[in-house]
Length: 107
Image (cartoon, rainbow, N blue to C red):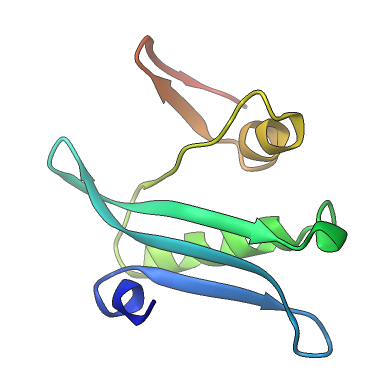
C-alpha cells in the first residue's frame, strides 16, 4: 500500500472517535490519452456508517490532495444501476460522466 503514496497516489482513512477505521480511499496516478490524472480506485465505508457523510468527506480530502499535487482530473468507475452509488456520484459529487457515446455534465 505504501507504493501508492510513494508514487503520486494517496491512501486515506476515516476514523471514528475511538480510533476505529470506518472508511478508506485508494487513488493512484494514471493516463487517459497521454493526460496524467488521479484514478480513484476504491472508496469504502462500513455499512453502519454509510449515508452519514463519511464517503463525501473522504472524497473532499482526495480532491484537496489532487489539487495540491497538480492533478486537474480525478476519474473512477461506478455502477449507475446501484441507486445510492449513482446518487452519490452524480448528485452529491456532481461528476462529469463520460461513456462511449460522449460526455455530458450532471449538475
